[in-house]
Image (cartoon, rainbow, N blue to C red; front, top):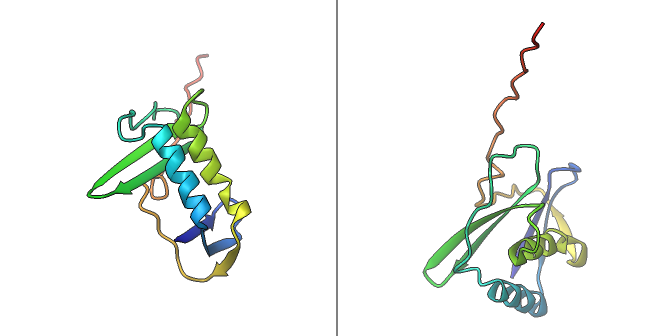
Length: 121
């Protein structure tokens, strides 16, 4: 299975690699244990200065987009998202000059401008 990693925060570029069968099995087990097919897709999306995780799962002829706020407590999907977010540290990656596009909305999303509050004088 192919693995793609884009480091927008550190501007180090794009990377590709391969995941092991063990990694794939662990991911599937975590998703099944979280009952991803039946959980709510979104958490509160009105907080603009928070970290969100977006996970898009494809299986058979189905697809589910799940979004989680990083502060959601006791959420097994959030736990899986955090595990995936840190997985690049355990996978042998090679730099690539090829652009990486993900299906997710957050990569494309722009935040609304911050409005300055009027000061009462």
